[in-house]
Image (tube, rainbow over all chains, first blue to last red; front, side, top):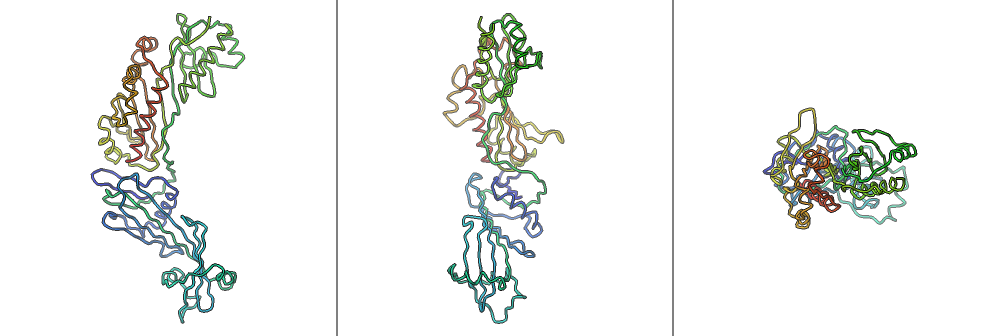
Length: 273
Length: 147
């Protein structure tokens, strides 16, 4: 993961949760030794390439150029590069596997040097030589179908992170914990409990009848006389005290729903009284 | 005789759950503790007990003391019935290192006056008051998510 340390505040922050975070975490864990431990993005763009020993190249570009944490963002593109050997040229197919151009393919040809032979080709270095000439898809089509000319492939990943200007320094941290950060969600009620009172006499036989018919529990928890489970929450009705009964509603998510259940309950016991 | 409300329902506990969408430093001298002290100086930080809980906890003894810049939000708190209830209402926010926020709103009415006295005190709790409390929590959440 990436930890950001801000000017004038203790501690650190991390990147907001996005579809890139899991990939960034995997890259940091895999290439941790190749990454700088600490750097300051406010001075200039900080760029790092990792994966030199593997068949992929990953570039980080980190810029301290947005005004606040809310504006921080991350962009990632991943391209698969395949190369074919065709007469005096290397023919390249570039397929976007992640990013704004997802699914797009483009073709390039690159003039082969006189002494270049397939067995000595380092595909990453070959691409980095440049001098690529864009080809029309239809021109490349026939060539690409010849498997016998296929040389190999490499993958290029580019990650651009725009962070807040007030960042003093950033560090890459190895994070082996398999925990998921949930996306930003506004707070929602998950459990609301209410207390109220009912007025009026509920005859004992009505209670007995309801309890039998609806298989309710007599003598519920907390000293209640009736314990009623509904799909909106739980209602507990306590013993009669001068024609009043205390009620508690638990595990509801709004007062409207609790009122609705109590009103229904009142109607039910009234019609039987 | 009809059975009806003797006293309308009054909330005594309300729990909300949200996420800020990033890992966060909840250590004692960490980022969130520093930022909360700057943004909400009226809140009280309750340090976690080592190996017992993993939350950074912030508490407001009275929800009305929360500084709310939004005029629409503060309008409801001026209503007498709502204010009577809200001044006895406390808010506790606990934040985990994975950015989960639990907002726990508790009414002190029940513990102070138990049962019937609460209703004699003319405490009224409406749908609007509930909406106000939830809106205050969303307001705090927006600020924390922007830290």
